[in-house]
Structures are given as structure tokens and as C-alpha cells.
Amino acid sequence: MSIVSSICEVRGIGLHSGVTTTVKILPTDPGRGRYFVRVDLPDAPEIPAHVDNVSQTTLSTELSVRGAAVRTVEHLLAALTALDIQDARIEIDGAELPLLDGSARVWVEALMRSSTKAFPVDLATSGAIETPIWIGDKDLFVAALPSPVLRFTYGIDFDVAPIGNQWHSWQPGKDDFATQIAPARTFGLAHQIEQLRSAGLIKGGTLENALVCDENQWLNPPLRFPNEPSRHKLLDLIGDLSLLGKLPLAHFIAYKASHQLHVRLAKRLHEMGY
Image 1: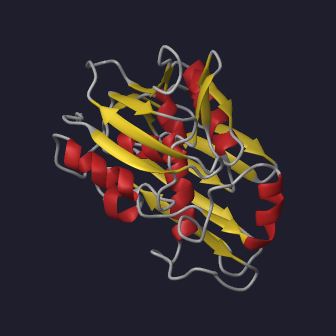
Image 2 (image 1 turned 45 degrees about the vertical axis):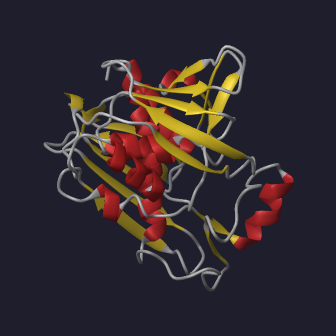
């Protein structure tokens, strides 16, 4: 297990709020888990990074406890999980984490400078999945399958040529998260931008922090990987499943899924005692 040994500080603009916040990741007591602290609110309420505290999954994952909320937590949580940092106090002076460049790369680089362990690492797991667990909605699904190794596989299928059908798979300890998954950026479709903004979303989204394409081409190339979108969705899946604490030993597979389906699987696993 890795340990945050010094203060890690990152500042940036939130994807949906468009508000700049500062995040400080600090050491905490062993066994305390990962938890957020809204230092801008009276009494600095704590929000444990646990699946029971998920309050919203619209284009990001939000956690809340007794009215105190923190949004777009998935990229940082994925970074903490992939670096096997089980305990961390995450102080934030606002309601949404910074999007940064749209990936988890900045989080990983900052955490690696502040941690005590060499990377990549094999992740500590809880009990092994013994029977397949599926959460589906029409042709969308996310599953946890019995496996001798921890592995994540993600497939997406969009009816626009720049994305199309693509897959990616990642195995902790074998494939380097810092270079193969963390740099993958969030992405969107140009024709949806105005609709989302009119709904009060992606106020902080720009061509500097998200990949955007129309039906024929990317508007802000180059991509960091040919299948960067599927790698980013895998990043989101890791972040959402991290809300279990330690992950069960399983092969997690998702296809055309969403934060909502990711969290539904996490809740099912939690109900089953994982």
C-alpha cells in the first residue's frame, strides 16, 4: 500500500461549475480511508469516498453527506486507487474538483511526487468474485467476472467516425497506469455542447481540457492514443468502483456504460459484502 507522505496541492477549474478550486491531499490515519473535506463550509464537513454517499451521476460522479457535496471525483479517485493509496484526506475549497487537462495525469504526477512507493503497483484487493455479476440496460452493461487477476476492460460504440467502436484493457501491476490510462482525456460531441450548457453543465469545458469531435473529425487533435476515449471511460470506471474501498478480485468489463451503471455495480457489490 502506498502512503501520501507530504501535502499534494492542485488547483484548477471544474468541468461543470466553471469555478476554480484548490485541492490539497494530505496524509491521514491508517485505515481512515479516502475522504473529502469541504474546507469552505462551516465546520469543514467530511464526505467519505464511499458508494453509499453517491448523490448524482449525470456526466460525473457526485458525493454528498448532509447537504455538503463534492462533484467530479472520479479522476482523482482513479489515480489514488491505481497508485494503491488507500488512506487520504482530500481538502477542497469548493463543490467540484478541477478538471485539469481532462485526464488523471496531473493527479498521478502530483501524487507520485508525494508518495512513498515505487510504481506501477499490484493493487490490494478484497475477496474474489465467485459468480458473474451483471448490471445491464438494453445493450449497455457493466459486469464483474471471476478472474485470477484484477483486470478492467472497456468498450464504447459511437455513431461518429472519429470514435466508432473501440476497446481497451488494463491489468494493474502489468500495465503502467501513469502512462497507459491516466493521460486519457474526457471527450464529447460538438453537436451536444450547447444543449449541455443550456442545462447548466460543462461550464468549464474547453478545447484545452476535453477532446471534442463532430461527425467527421476531432476538432482539437492530436489524440494521445488511437483509442483515447475508451481508455478514458476505463479511467472513469476505476474511479467509480473505488467507492467500494478495496476492489474485489475480478475482471470488470463495461460496454457503452455510464457513471450510473458503474455506481449500480458498485452498490450491488457492496450489498453482497465486497
